[in-house]
Length: 244
Ligand SMILES: Nc1ncnc2c1ncn2[C@@H]1O[C@H](COP(=O)(O)OP(=O)(O)OP(=O)(O)O)[C@@H](O)[C@H]1O
Image (tube, rainbow, N blue to C red):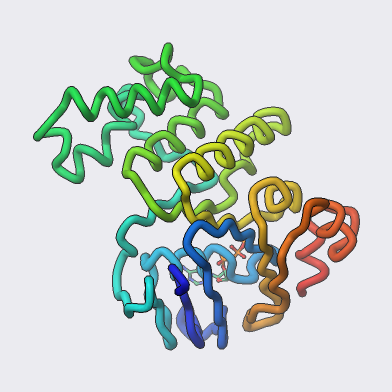
């Protein structure tokens, strides 16, 4: 059974139709990349998959049941880390436990879990630092630790590496892949970078047209990056052109 499923989804911002007749299914534990030109509707689709935005028509099902509102067990990570600037790195990572009421019940266990996550992401020595004292990559790692601290089953990523330099980008990609595998997460990433999809996903979905629909949906093999570059050309952002 599909873990996430959109059937016949359309989405309009006012008079403009962004998505039309979009069908997407994602199985539990699957890792999917969503590609398409800038402005095609990738972020909108991701927010519909998260249940944060309601489709104008069509529906979202989670494990076969219709869901309206935020998908339980689903967390998102964005291009900017959106950390609380006044809180320490540790307190930022404790935020999901605080919101879920777990921190008030067992602070010591929550801190152990948060510190383990920070340690796993090479941030243990920065636990008491404020976000502005960290590099961009460390801030994004903190956002990843915070996302995982909510104990998700589904992790949705919206251009999570695009503000990072190439070295940090590939290091963080490796961390996301390792932690997604370790925690058996379902992962959906929206990106312009074919290398992100090649590194993280076993399947690619391409949005194209106006209003956008799914124009391609295919499995990625062992040489995923070469496959994607064959389909979309040499430039990393080629889907902007190929799926227009
Ligand atoms: N709040 C809004 N009101 C009106 N139109 C919007 C709004 N948000 C997004 N749009 C429009 O909806 C379309 C899809 O936006 P979306 O952010 O989903 O695209 P995207 O594929 O993620 O783009 P990018 O790759 O540039 O981030 C765009 O044409 C955008 O201009």
